Image (cartoon, rainbow, N blue to C red; front, side, top):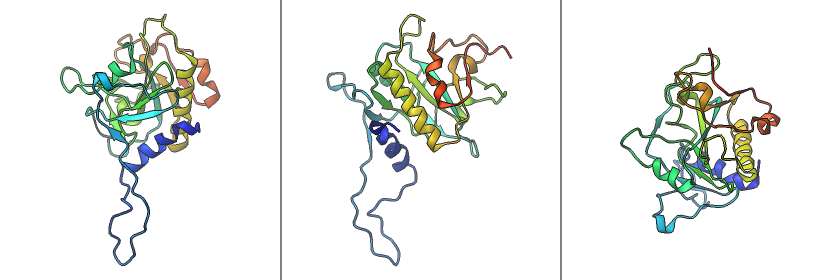
Length: 220
């Protein structure tokens, strides 16, 4: 795991059922350990926004999420591109609760900056009407959505720093969950052709992760 991504582990672990070190323990002495702070922060104002930097992460919670369907595995990575030109603007869109509210679990800027938007134990709203190669519907139930800041015009590139951050997150998710496939938003979108992202993505960069990949338009 890339050391700078360690906060990903902190973020997805601490806020989901962890007991505070200061919680009373029946019949036992409370351990004297510092309480881990909540890593989430509110959306900064435009004047105070600053991308976190290469392989650094901040958690700016999106309200657009809910509980996963009971019993759903977390076994799929969905790669998206934002069609928005900055990490700040994408994060702001994920704060909107009216007119097609959306979110992802992570968004990666072109410089490798990372914003976590939703706990991986919760369902982010990124896939829309969808099914995977096995025909399973509602991909949001069992997937982790990762957005890449990119204009999605087939010309805008994916810089090395951004690709390294993506690889690091997928490797960490693979370690924590039974991830069995990586898919493009284009592949899972219904009807076929509804989405084209991430346009012109270099899929070969993800081969070393050893997972089946499904991208392009799903004709089935």
